[in-house]
Length: 456
Picture 1: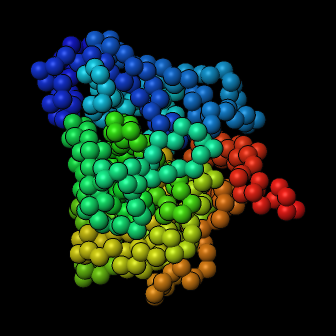
Picture 2 (picture 1 turned 90 degrees about the horizontal axis):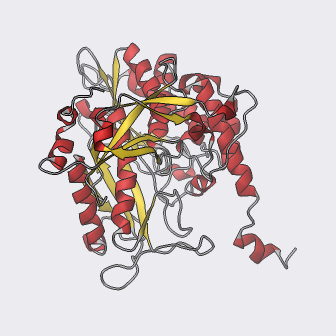
């Protein structure tokens, strides 16, 4: 980066507007770790303006979500904690409007000392998939939907998670999907989400009340997958900060409460021809093309093995319950929300495929990359999908593995997906997930104590 003191002129307009007429104090130099949290360094803005690059240890990507480090025999020099080289992607710069000082966040590109993209970095995994599409003359377009819960502060992990208290003094109620008064119950949190998003230059398409108690869905405008993954990455932090201002937590757990629906990150996909700008899912006669059905077939074929990428924790699999607003298989149909793969109502130019399997607990870079990878393999291999389902899909056979253990076994047996996501990334990812699973197995649940202690 230039040492020119006017480096801020290269920032996106929203970031320039945020700092205009004010003294920029700090810059957060960040990357996404594997769970999707911000990692990096904070520094005075004047130092950032003079810096070309910075360093972080690669050990960040050998950590589980609990903070433990996985030991991988195949990795040489794993515990030397070698440096990764970080350079700022100024196009990603955005405000951190909840901080006391005037602060910007800047996502950084990550390479090794030889200038090669670090394969363990989630953002680089998505770039890898997008490069494969570009080589075919294709440009993916995605639109993520973010579901999450506002919950009462949960200080003791042994206590069940409960809905938040609304402005009426009553706890948020379930089964109020699309209710405007339900959204008003926690209006101050929504107001801060809007204000933070505006300061960061993010455009919210819609906000709705979902079916769970305190469950909200935010839809984003369709666009470039890398840009949208960046926004979801930023939004998760933004939403948590907004909730904390009003004495509640925001959680992106797939299933925080057993008697409430889970939270998904539905992903809509369409593919443009780079030369013509036309949607390759629609032909000249406005009918679906072979590429459209092949993309669906790729999802049906490879999403079971890709499940660890889009359902990354033991809790993720609690969401896949029939008749509970979540799919249990990979049937497909138009305008049918019981299927794992839905074709929304649209005009021919906007024909798209919706992946309803991905959970909101997944890293957005990894989740979008895996979803696109499945569709890509279907198009490249010329696969054919099953016939579209008629009626409720919950009655069909289950396709989605019921646990992380079974999902990882499917991924073990899928060299095509391993290769496309990156062999080194996939190896380390599987190792961390197995370690998390083993750690979970060491915990004895209240159900076991209640029903087994004296009854067996």
